[in-house]
Length: 225
Image 1 (spheres, rainbow, N blue to C red):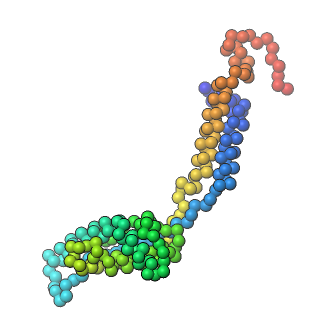
Image 2 (cartoon, helix red, strand yellow; image 1 turned 180 degrees about the horizontal axis):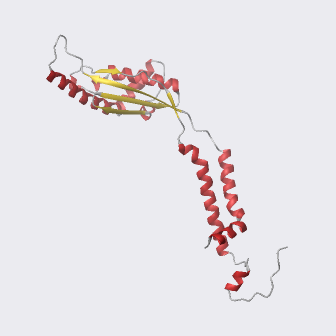
Image 3 (cartoon, rainbow, N blue to C red; image 1 turned 60 degrees about the vertical axis):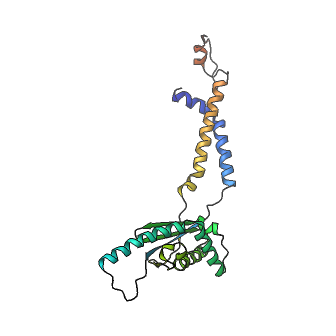
């Protein structure tokens, strides 16, 4: 079908195209809810073993200490990504007067590691509570990491925060901004498909050309006006 013919169909069946889009627009406006605000906070930690008292380390010993730190960071990352860490943070928050389920802690937590650097990031919709969760997570990391590192013989690894935690609001994603326009586009496409379908099955003759294609000769034509 040529574009000119499609335009004629649109002019004849415009209601079938506009009505679905109007319904989608009305429902979208009535049911619209602004996306919930989300906040993020992250801290980098330097991880290592405490130095032996009174011992002078050689270059070889320093190398092995750094190598060990990498293994410790890997172990901490696995621990943080497990359920036990979320439960420990939930218990620490309870001592501070905040009730946050372990699942809620774990759901907004992201851990990453690079050599002796450990990064912890948290997401939550309450900025004040998010700051408290990060404080509790830092305490658990520093004071209870021996639970995840049995190879240290019960000693805790040194976990030193390198950043001051700053809570930042996460901007709304482009998906929430394009949600209604995409729905309207789909409604218009569906309306156009419906109009073309109705035009295809409609036996009504609209133009002289259609009669001539059927083999009839047109003797006269009554204008619209």
